Length: 418
Image 1 (cartoon, one colour):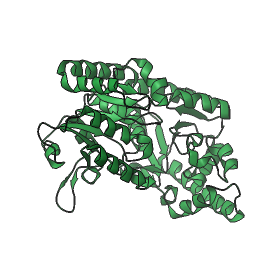
Image 2 (tube, rainbow, N blue to C red):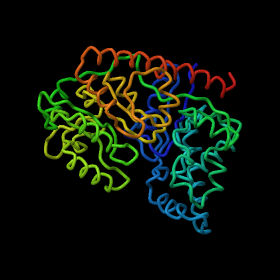
Image 3 (tube, one colour):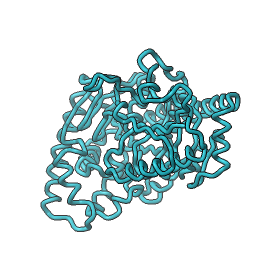
Image 4 (cartoon, rainbow, N blue to C red):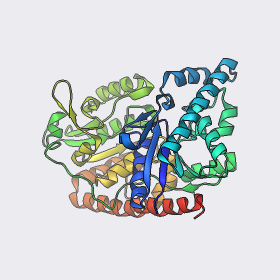
């Protein structure tokens, strides 16, 4: 008999990691006969299974007012404490309403008691579970100790209490081995490791009529080689290494295509990257205005494509991140059978590389050796085919929906005492 599962976060909308991974979990849970319901401040899920509370969104004015007064200082004004508790009480009432409305048996807490983007909501969830004893699974993506901006704050008491809470009815799930150790060491909380997954059991969608003209639309010539950087333009994505690589490949037909914009961290890095590309003579296409979450036409009647429309056209994916919690773009590239080159960020080196993928890598600096490995992948079709087929096979063994299905089944039985 299936259960009614309530997902809780500040936002389930768009293509951020938490929204994507929770949708995958819901798909896997549906295969196991469970129904999912959604609580957040921003939602793009079906309205009949959604409970939207705008104050639960981390970008809501009442929460940004609080955050502004919690970060970068160690003293908290009593007025801020009052606001936090008022908002937490309001949100806790809305959680009671959500659980009653859909008759929820089990909660899945998506990053909401992991990173303190919304302190009142974290407190509300913690108190709600302490009061009801409702079984819950905490799915943790980014902990506060992994982010510099939370190292100096006036909320250490709340971090101890709710990020994440130690409560007997919550089972904890992390996405990498380092988090598992840190959580145990810092909080005395045991957890299960369940990495991000992809539907490797079903092959990816191919180019269709809509996306067939994508290369022309972004101004590429038929014989250009499209090197895709499928990330936002923020410093930790290491886009300067991608520029260096293309410069060292030394062929004008290699074009670097960056899919997303600078986003919420300012435009300084964007200017640095643009300047560097100019100085290096590398042709970079910033195409974020042509990429959206859904296919549609823009105000000028031009097609907007999705990230998934891009992958089948790409010849190589660059992923030179210095830090990732897991690295979804890595699985996406393998899923679409596009070769990739990456920086050995810590989680890759520790959790992913030992599985035996065939991927050229760098350690913080682009070398001649890696340039030649990339050239071989680009120019030797047989070598390229062997590498991408091998990577698809390994990924489907370790990072497929089947892995999530087995672990979630055991977790749910465990948390419900079945």
